Length: 227
Image (cartoon, rainbow, N blue to C red; front, side):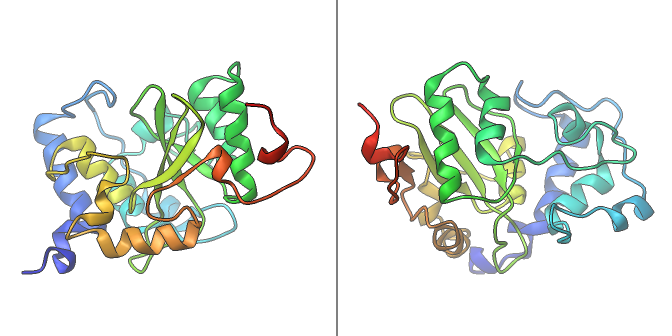
């Protein structure tokens, strides 16, 4: 079967595989501490929960929250796992939350909001590079892209995963993904089509953008900043 059409490679079905792995073996990474007692979100609360702007939750997030709402509270999505209210911020504010606000390169990530104005939610993983869920436009499966930000040299942003489903599957080690570059999934047989959708929707393209690739001008724009 074509991997791109395998149900268990996408959405809620893929998250079911993640849940099975985490329930039996825990997370294989220290970035995501093991769940000793999952806290499922009540169905009635789930039905009322919306993304910023009133949009429905992506299938992957609904399925994960039905298993556990505590971990996302720990990484800063909301305060109360029993009654979550998503604490989404712009890319600049999310970057400051993830990296700390003292670095000028982190501040420059805020300029990407000219291109990426939708709210974001932080995810774990990386040091100079971090991951976040970008709540712009969903793909054809209803999932939102996971972006990577990198401040090792010039600030850089790209689509790294086609959704929370694939990000969680990689974090749990239930799919075999090779990352020669941050955007390697653009060539993956199961995920290439979804990656193309997000590359177009975000206007980041298949390879992502560095700060000086941003196509806008103004008194504080990239063209007027010193190297």
